[in-house]
Amino acid sequence: MADADTVILEGHEFEYRRKLVHRTKALSIAGDLAFRLVERYGLINAQEDGEDSAGRAKIKLMPVHDTIQRCFDLAEAFVLEADRRGHIIDVPLPEKIERKERERV
Image (tube, rainbow, N blue to C red):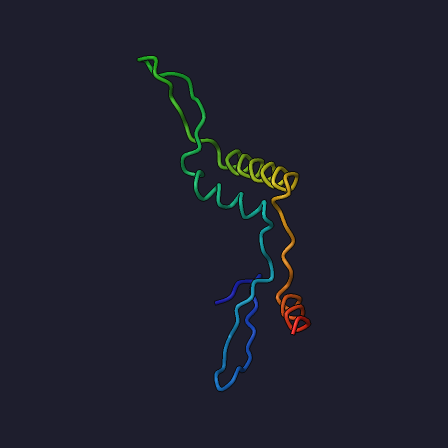
């Protein structure tokens, strides 16, 4: 079953019929990183909540919105710094790679 952001393309290749599932929306680099941070740290992200009667620090889970906001802040800061350092590069489309290979022959 496809959702609203997915299309199913049908085609024939050789003797076989095939279906290709293609998403029409994708996360950016920062969005993907934020998703991974939420996935990894969303259940353990905590903040101080005073002390108990023995003087030990108490913690509580951060509100969901604050956790997501922090993950996006981290992801966006990372992407900006990675770009500043030259760690984000352009990747050519497959047809451009294929065309360059044919030109070499």
